[in-house]
Length: 413
Image 1 (tube, rainbow, N blue to C red):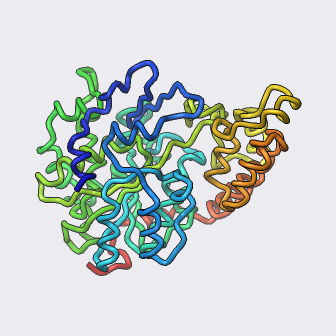
Image 2 (spheres, helix red, strand yellow):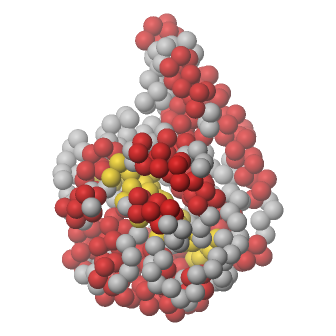
Image 3 (cartoon, rainbow, N blue to C red):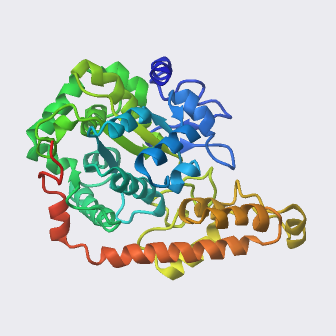
């Protein structure tokens, strides 16, 4: 109850609470800005957005109910806040159904490692709770926001779908869809979109998303399209026409404005509010306060990078938390809070003891230099991306089509 009250008290306006002030972070679905070398202040963001911090009580409850160790994304604070996750756990405890929904905006042919985070965690959630998953490819959004043709964005979306499939999702439990295709294939999806559009005003979307008078009407209408998969009415084949199956959405915190709008409108159209799990942002190689962009190949590691490219990018561009000289580093130690190689290891090095040893004994103490962290990261990412690339070669057009065909999944409703 306290969580819901906090959300109701929080302004839906993403620019509220001084977010544009000089020393404040700015976060919306398209821009993330921070003046701090350590990145966004997530404690402040929780207060501004009116969500709830993931605490040890929630993590322990997940472990107790599932009998599985929580994912390191939870224990390390990579997924750090939520909306009504306890409600989802109540359903699981009562053996009542729910489903997962996440997505990808296909703006570039090659996904980068930051794009993997919600999908890796969603895959763990699906395997842990054994529930259906829908993945939305917002090709329409990218056409509206980017200087890209409709043909190109549809081509890029298909390539991204193959990348996602290569992460190992179960086709019998997973439906992937592109908005341009699914709206025409499923009248119920379109009806859900229009129902949302009817109950959200222009003033509301201006306040939430900062739209101006020069923005296209397509942009103004789009938030309802991203909201619609939160409701089981959008997937009649999966849920056997049931409109009240609750939804859990793992996503980066910058997508939360969409779902604050969704949660606000849900009771007015007789739908269930979706629950959410929010992740931190994946930092650019150049530092947590710089922008990672698919149009800037040196800002991140891409799934198409060769082992040599991975090595060269990390060695050349990964921002260091080390000192100016070896002598000074031995004396003062490195700063893991700003060192990008260490930050990446938090995401991809599974061994908690190894990670803590690197932080406390090796790097922070000054015993080991930045080059050691970079070498450790290079090995891990070369292996991770090499494995994804090997699986990617096995993903055919027919396999992608099978994942994207509207159908009943391996669940009874």
